[in-house]
Image (cartoon, rainbow, N blue to C red; front, side, top):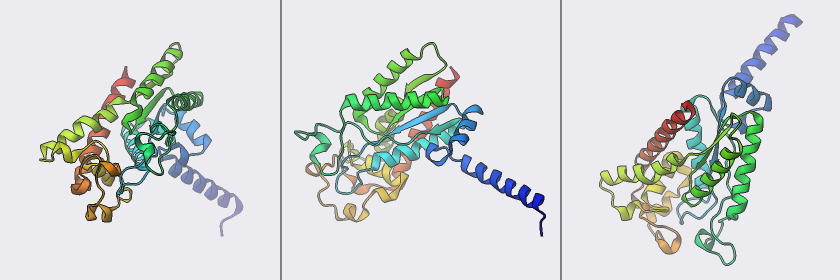
Length: 266
């Protein structure tokens, strides 16, 4: 039987080991406040703010597609950087007019906020993270509709923080890779522009499959019904696969890491 001092030392060792395991996560939500403070002090001064959206994605993809993709891909980017953490996903974004309903708001389940509310939300989140000690605060949007809003907020904050060590950035390279390099890779493999699509088509659906297959209703894809513009689908998702989506994952993570490494070095 261990004596009391020995038991105490063992308990301390177990506690330290458990803390180290938890601290391996790059997600703020998984960490305690002291763990975050320690990581920031040890050089983890970059924080990614993943931005998703809650919108219709046709009859074959879930409403939270952007939220899951933004979190997972930001996690991979942060892990590759080695000095970054990931804030909670911002799931409420502009999706069109509520009354009368427009854009994605024409479909059940979509949630929209005004561009002004969205920008204020980004500003407040960034200021909170700066107060923690983060120095490079990066907006990472998985949705095309608010890219200009991200950039506008980053520019305002950068001007406000000009005489401080903190910087704000909109990671446009993330979405640019998703919108240009990824579709080009699909086209090079013989997929047509009409199939690749712009929303809930081949590219969008394959990327979701590669990130998390549970985002896609495979039985609906197999049935092939209602996969058209009237039902919120712009493209042809029937040939979607994890393998095709991995092309997008690789392009997004690679270009994002390259861009952030170059920005923080300067």
